[in-house]
Structure formats: C-alpha cells, structure tokens
Amino acid sequence: MSSLRPSIYLDHHASAPLTPAVRAAIGTLLGAGAANPSSIHGAGQDARHAIDRARVVIARAVGAKPRQVVLTSGATEANHAAIRGCVVTAARPVAWSSALAHPSVHAAIAALPNWEAQSLPITPTGHIDLAAARQLLDTTDARVDLLSVTLVSNELGTIQRVSELVGQVRASHPKALIHCDASQALGRVDVDFGSLGVDLLTLSGHKIGAPAGIGALIIADGLVLRPVLPGHQEGERRGGTENLIGAVALGTACGELPWRRAQMQHVRKLRDALWAGISELEVETVRHADVGQDQETGTCLSVAFVGLSASDLVMSLDVEGVAVSAGSACSSGTLSASPVIAAIVGEDDSGLAASTLRFSLGPESTTQDVDGAIAATALVTTRLAQQQRR
Image (cartoon, rainbow, N blue to C red):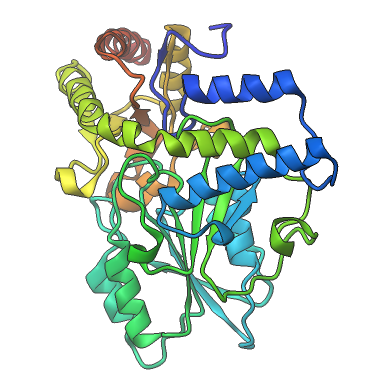
C-alpha cells in the first residue's frame, strides 16, 4: 500500500492513530505558531502555560503530581533516563528485568557500566513467575539495586502483577529502585503511580493517540536521577527545548483516557472475533498467552502460523492492505524472530517464534476490519502454504 495508513490497521500496539482531538490541538498550535517555552516574552510564556496545563493532565491521568512529570522524546528516552540515571554507590550493582521488557530497557541496562544484568523467569502464559521470582530475590546473597518491570507486554498484552512483585522486592530489598514501563498499559488498564508502589514510571504518547516523539517519566518525590541529557529544562532533569506540540498532544490524549478505557470491552470482542475466524483457517495455528480477562488487555492477539514465515506473512498481508507486526515494532524492522515468543514457548517449540504474528486492535478498529483481516489472512496463508508444497 502506498498510503501511510493501510485500509486495515491492526498494529495499535506499535502506534495508535491520532485522535480527532489531538489533531485539532496540533492544528491550533501550528496555526498560531510556536514560541520557545523558556522565552520571557508573551508568546514564550503562552507556550510555557500550555505545557504546564498539559503536565497537570498527564499527572492526573496516573495519579501523580505535576512536579513529578518529566517530559521526554518518548518511552525509549524515558526508560533510558530512569535506568541510566540511577545513582548507586555499590561497586557491582545488579539490575533485574525480564524477557517481557521492551528492547530499550535491555539496551539501557546494557549501557550501565560495571552493572550485572539478571532476568526474572516468565511463565508460558507471558507473565513474570512471581513464585520463582520470590525464590530468586529472597535468598541471602541476592542483590537487587534496580528492578525494571513492564506493566503490559507490548507483544502479548499480558498484565503483570506489578504491585505484588514490588511488595516482594521491598520486603527484602528496601533500598532497591523500581522502574515500571507502562507504555502499553496507559489507556488499556488503570495506571496509578501510587498504587503500583514504584519509583519511576514510563509513559508513551503514540500508544494513546498522540504522535510519536513525546513521552514522560514520572519520578517519585525525593528521588534524584543523574540526567542523561543535562540542561536547565524540566527542573534540570532533562535538557533541551520542550516539545510544545508533543506536550499538548500528550496532555490532550491523556484527557481522553476515560473514553479509551470505556472502549476496551468493545475492542476485546473484536479481538476475540478475530481469533475465532483465524482459528478456523486451514493452516495450523497456535495462540500465545490465551489467558483470562483479568490477565491480559484484550487488545492483542499473538498467533503462530505453524510452518509459515512471519516475515512472509507480514509482507503478504501488507500487500493485501492489512498492517500487522511480527513481535515488537521496535525490533520487527529486521523481521527477526521475537525473543519474547521464544522465551515463552521454550526450546522444544522455538520454531513458533519465527512464525508468530501480532495483531493489535484499538478503539478505532471495526467489525469490517476484523472481517477483512480474516479474509486476507485466509488468502495469504493458503498462498504461502501452496508455495511451500511446490
């Protein structure tokens, strides 16, 4: 397809469409012209007030205070700021994450000099194994200086029991810094900074109808981070002229979160209808993370098409006007097998990772989208299977 948006867009976990309200807010700013929020003249102060208003809405959306919100260029920067900004005096600190973490989390931990990286085990259903985590973290020689946990898996839509895990860690490692990446959670489940009990919280704009290039890091009061980008902006916690358009767009999108959350049952029904159709295709399929409603968002369908190549499927569906992903959008540009799927299926079924597609839906998805996607998937899977038999 030549357009930026194909006729059937089922890749909402990669990026959600801009909402009409966000488009209108951006259009207003573009029409008025944007000044530097650090300037002391009237236009600059108008820009500053617009950012301050947006910060209030962003904070309110996650039960935080405006002063705790640091605007960033997106979730990747927020993850790096949270992890690489940690101030730890230990000679050999230890950072924990899991296979469910976004690639930017793994990259940020790998960039920490003299740190040791450890991974919490996950279950075949795509959840952190809390019982196994307790055994690992409660041992006398266990060290936890930093824990980074994902609230909702970007590839599976599974919801992690973050507050329970935080309670476990706090009981045995009270000085540990705990970071939560809520990029995929916002708008799909309740996200409350205080209830989660974490020190740092990552948010992303383009998962909830704002454009890419804006995100936020929520920082607990009293916690001091070493800025990855030093400068006087954002309370000297993130340098660089603030993205006025991005900030207003994120604030507008956060203001629409009640609407987005109210659509989730509708989205779940569409997702379930999609699976019902795909499961009846002639090709053999395996659904990952097929769990109860309270354990996943209802917005994601991760399916292995046994014996077929995920990269071939993605490209063939694109030709038919259907946009989907093979794993994380931030890594699927290479169309390599998903390490998340490889981790949950284990070595015996490791080939499933190379045949897995991620369909992800949002409030903008329709019954027509689902019907069209099922028909297109039937077409391309039949064609690819025939090509393999030749």
